[in-house]
Length: 117
Length: 107
Image (cartoon, rainbow over all chains, first blue to last red; front, side):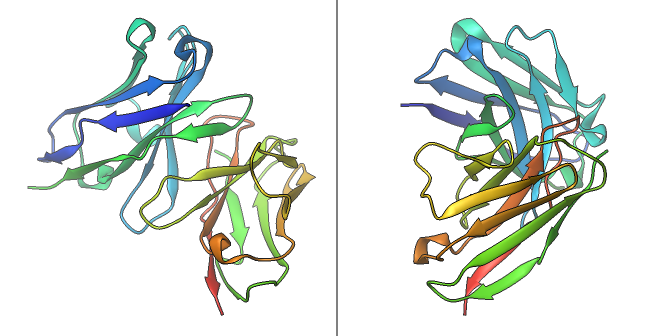
C-alpha cells in the first residue's frame, strides 16, 4: 500500500526556517517524481515544487523561488522541503504527493505550517 | 504561468443529479489536465488524468473530456459521497497550476 506521511510542520516566526519531511513507503521511491502542494486556510490548492527521480531537476512556483529548496534521499525513501525566510503568506497545510505520468496519484495527509509572531 | 478558471465556483445539487464542471486554460495545455476532489480536512484525491482517463478505483459515474483550453468533469448521477470541492490541475508546463475550485453542496 502506498503511504506518504508528512512531518515537520509547526509554528514559526516570520523570517524563520522550517524543514518538512515526507516519508514514503509501499512503492519504489526512486522511480517517481515527487511534488509538494500547499493549501492556505480556507483557500485552494497551490503547487509549490517538484523533483525528478534522481534529484537533478527541480521546479518551483515563483513565490517560493530562492527561499524554498526541495530535495530527496532515495535510500531513505524521503522527500524534503527546506523553507527559509518564511512569510505569513506561507501559512498552509503542506502535502507531499507522488507524481505518475502527468498526475499526482497519491497524497499524504498534510502537515500544517503556521508563520506568525 | 497558465491560469485555470473553473466554473461554477459553487454548485448546489441533489443526489441523482447530473453535474458538469468546466475548467478553462489561459493557453493550450493539450490533454495534460487532471481532476481531483477534496473533502474537508482531507487530502485531495485523483479522479481523472490526461483529461479523460479514469484513475483506478474511481467510480465510472465520473468522466472527463476536452483538450486544448476547455475541459469538463461530469458526474452522471451525484452520490452523497461526492459532495466535496473539485479542482482541475494542468501539468503541461511549470508551475503545475490548479484551478480555483468548485464546491459541490447538497441542495
